[in-house]
Image 1 (cartoon, rainbow, N blue to C red):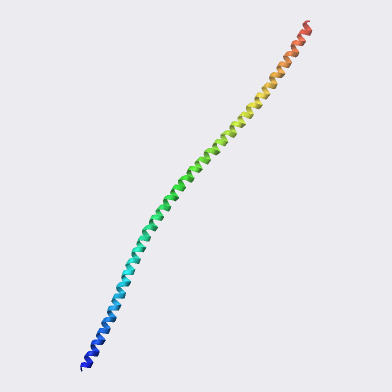
Image 2 (cartoon, one colour):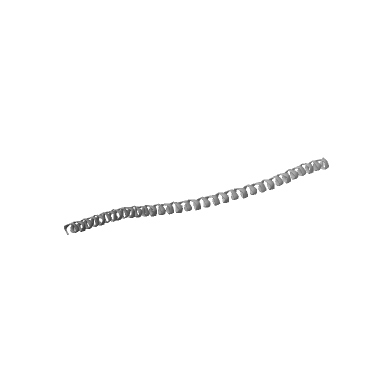
Length: 122
């Protein structure tokens, strides 16, 4: 009967040892899980930070793009204004040329008519 008690005790010890081992393993897994979870939380926080950083960068780029567009439109307006100004200058130059020709013609006519007057008067 001592033998049976001894066997029972060994079986109990063995079972307790196994249970202890399982509990230890579960505890280690829990610790690993907690650590892993902490790392994921940190990652999530840093990802969130990166995301908002990216959003800020995108907003900044959008603003810069708008500024560039405005600047480009201004330049286009400037070149359009310059083009119109040059057109106007050409038109004015053409008008001046015509007037110059008319004046030269009048002067020529005047010279001719005064010559004729001299001829008639002389």
